[in-house]
Length: 259
Length: 328
Image (cartoon, rainbow over all chains, first blue to last red; front, side, top):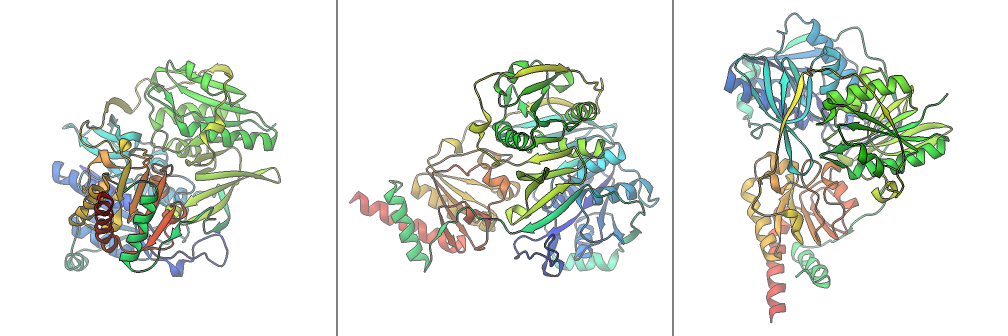
């Protein structure tokens, strides 16, 4: 089984986010970039499938700050190959990224045809579309979103996938392969890999670089303004040492008959 | 001629979702501002009677097809794209939940149209639609406009109160047809219901909810002890469930359950929109988070900018003391 995992870097929202001088985007210099959380789950699901059925996992990412670390970490976790698409402009939209991913998958001779293409079901900055259905559309492949479980039939031509619905309900679907799956969560938490193993992977492996395709997706939306959220209300903040705060919380709870 | 404003009705298992009514309320405002009609698109099989609940719209376009009995993103998007191409609405508003996720993106891609996600509000400025969208887990917002029409707009929960989208009268219904593949590459097989038994968090008066800030499974006892002292139960946000620290039945939010307890103590939860969707109506929300800018503080009644690992044990002690004192 040949599995491609599409990885993208997003702003780490634990850090303070700053707006760029254009007033329409994030200030890149202030950002710490991390792997999009559900892409980390997509990688884990791919590695679990490889362990179960054999085959090869290739991770593909667009060039971005910190992306080499993420690709080497993927190799250290068990991915077989890592590919980086270089030369894309910064600030690409999800639609632009999906278009580049699709063209690279369709044209790069170094990438074997995939049975499964996995990526995160949604990212925190998917303003103009979701990458998984866009890639599925561009490559004319079937697509299932919000996937939390994958089982591949012996023939390798079909998979049974489990998708999440609201209220804890899940739905089982049969999907013809090759297909694109938007992974919400892997069947196990993403594995941890120590820094020493990542360093070893960086010495043992090379990241393959591919140029960004020349044909780009046009822009369909225009950001007029970026702003910090307008706050309709804000919590009354309780301050002081932990004991004082705890006392105040108990007063609030007692007043409402909750203790 | 400008088309109508469309809302895709999100129907699942014989019911129209709450979010559909929120989106109808928003769509109605937009249609009025633009001087256009509001139409609902209802896709399904043998669900025509649901149209009676969609009277906020001027009319309903109903598609009945066996392939739409259990919604998949592919069949829904294929049906909707055919209608958009044929009838040319001005904009299409789609509720953004796990039932319809991916539909808007596919329609926009199939028809080479703008797609805009995470819309919390829509405004008409100089006759053009502007979308107000929430990104980065609720930490940034953007004002966006589509560069061509129709735009396919994914609407997040909370845009308008659902009750504003409900009216008593039934709308006019027009049946329309689409062509869908007989052997689609994605086929629904069955539903898997959540495991019964254990604690039902939707019936608890007190919930101690844990998020990523709890840092590790070993620290879950801190939340359990506080919940026990308060006579409540522990629930969690998505990352905690994905880590396997709590079972799926304890998840609050978009993929999990919606709760409305008397007390919701959010411990180490940032307040991403997907989580807020499931707990925003709690009577009293107290939040603890190390990040004073965390969006959860915009919703909570009381906030504590601190480490849950430090605050929870002290609070548990204080709750126990208070209860003992009260007992005399």
